[in-house]
Length: 202
View 1 (tube, rainbow, N blue to C red):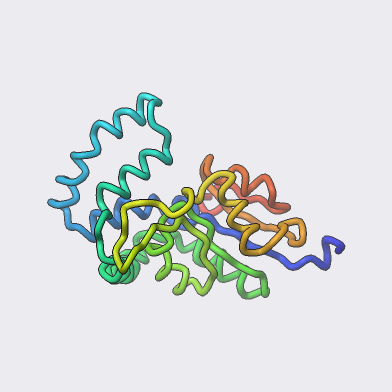
View 2 (view 1 turned 30 degrees about the vertical axis):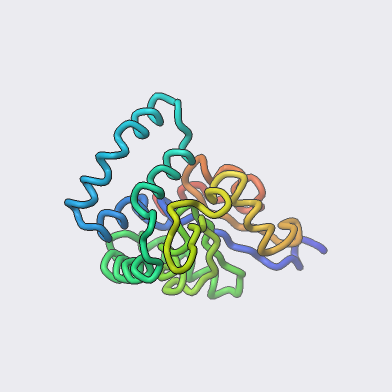
């Protein structure tokens, strides 16, 4: 298939690319309230220090964060909080240029998806409002409650490419356009014919 005839797959990272900053930690503060958030966060001081000293990886620290805050939490409650967070923080969290960039890709008929390390449950309302598909880190849910574990692996680095291939098949069948802003997007940008680095921060 020639490049001109390949369908276009437009892939957007979320945190820092379409948004001004991370979404997960601010969501936790929003959902639990400032006092409970600070109390729970204090229990992660040692893992945070280990991360800063290079003894704990970024993914391992995130696993600790998820387990510490979300073990036993109702999926229904999480979904309710995610909807409220999206509604209340949309204009403060998302870059207008990023929103427009997504809309432009949709307008010309491209296949558009978010591909993010943030939890899928958190980003569903944002993806729905942007009118795009969603590939993101999945949280394990059993009998309606979060177990505090990540299902599979954190959706960053090589995992982003693997998750995209699991949904869309071999990416060389597409003309891939990608937007990212961090080291977690490196492999995604490398497979794209049109990579865009911190494009909406200009």
